[in-house]
Amino acid sequence: MRMMIAETKYFGPVEYEPDDLLHFPNGLFGFEEEKEFLLLPFEGSRGNLLCLQSLSTPSIAFVAMNPFSLLPDYTPDLTAEELAFLGASHSGEMGYYVLCAVREPVGDSTVNLKCPIVVNPDTRTAVQVILQGSPYHMRHRLAEFRSGEAGASC
Image 1 (spheres, rainbow, N blue to C red):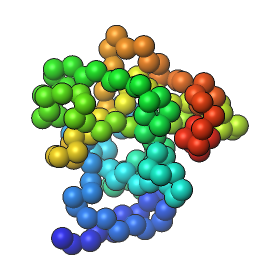
Image 2 (spheres, rainbow, N blue to C red):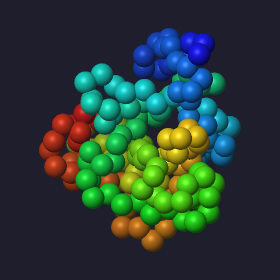
Image 3 (cartoon, rainbow, N blue to C red):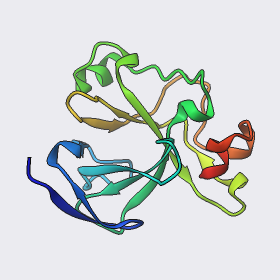
Image 4 (cartoon, one colour):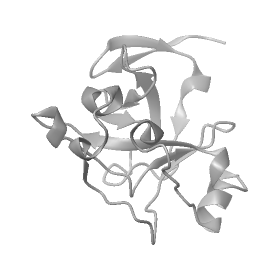
């Protein structure tokens, strides 16, 4: 497979393969025109803190986290329509990421557990959803979570 180069907000130019791309047919909320992203881990985060980098607009990059590193019993429940869109039969087959709004001090940063990014790992199709009827909110402060490494690194 042929290596490509992407310009990124936080890492400068990075090499990637076309199979590394996440495809968002509907874009992200507020960024509907952005259809392809790379998910790049921040060094030292053990894959729990990542950059969701737009391929077409280098200045558009979001800090994303593995929600299970913050809340091990996180249970996103997708609708039948969302599962069909992703080509899956069960919510547990998908990968999940939540977006982080970074603030100073870090404990005031928030994560959006109500609107996760959902990825079908087989097709690399992704969608941002709103979990209806869930106990999760759009702004959970990192300070709410245990003071482990994941919460401290956003």
